[in-house]
Length: 230
Image 1 (cartoon, rainbow, N blue to C red):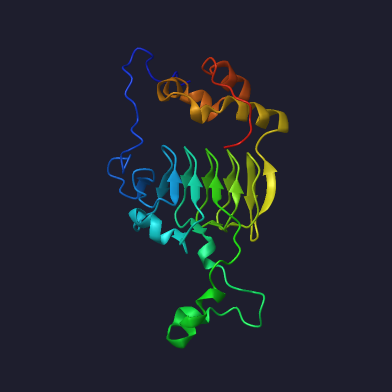
Image 2 (cartoon, helix red, strand yellow):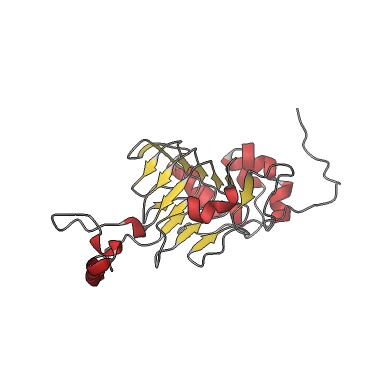
């Protein structure tokens, strides 16, 4: 049995502001220090893995993002290669005979730009903490994904995903929840993603492989909260 690290060893904090957290692995980037758009917010230690060009995340993976809707991604999320967030700028009119956006082609058609401005949207796209996105999954505009969710490879998420839900398919459907309703409630109360980094480091084995009871047993005093989402 692996007893884990020496408790007497000095604490060396991980740095959420380092672009490449894995030495020699340029394919992995932390998104918080990477993104510059005021319309994108990303929490600590959320990463994207892509062997091609992970630093182009804002332009290659967040598409049709003209605002004002925002993309909000929580802490400790894992984004596999090719994850795409489709934003509301991809919307077309569907109330007339044609969906084609004539005004963007220029010429006299541009006189009718009002026909494609102010199209209805679904609001911000919001991802909770500790969400795992599989290879080439896609998230449509205005979706809200709960904490601890898993998005299967190739899934196209068109509706909200519950906390600790596993979804897959096109359109994505709920396959199952990772824990019982009671345990999900406890996990949201424990909110391990808000623990101080030093305390989290001391108990990372409980976070990664322990039971909910074991996680609760090592929670810092006063860290639990009423689960109302973020």
